[in-house]
Length: 128
Image (cartoon, rainbow, N blue to C red; front, top):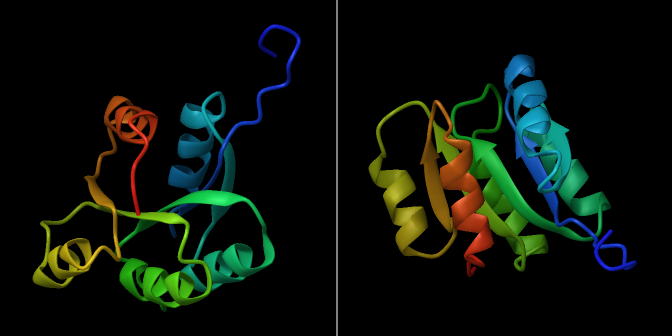
């Protein structure tokens, strides 16, 4: 609460197939965002389509089933105003670079994630 006014935190969906990472992310960013989590691309897509007011999505790139780019590609057709980011423990691929250049993905973050880098990116007001 700021000056008696309730400040609504932006809604962020974090997607990772590693459960430990979901808990860690939620703990790290609970003061910055209203953090939602999903453990698969399919679960995340359902959450994106059913939940209003999601402003940001950060998805792991490599997951079983639907990978991060597939998730973003499907979600962006229905919810184009969300800022989508990728998180990867691997090098930037041509496919990821192309998605960034085509404005499908606003940014990619390297694992292990750097909380300060993520906070700085979102506090700067990322564009679609």
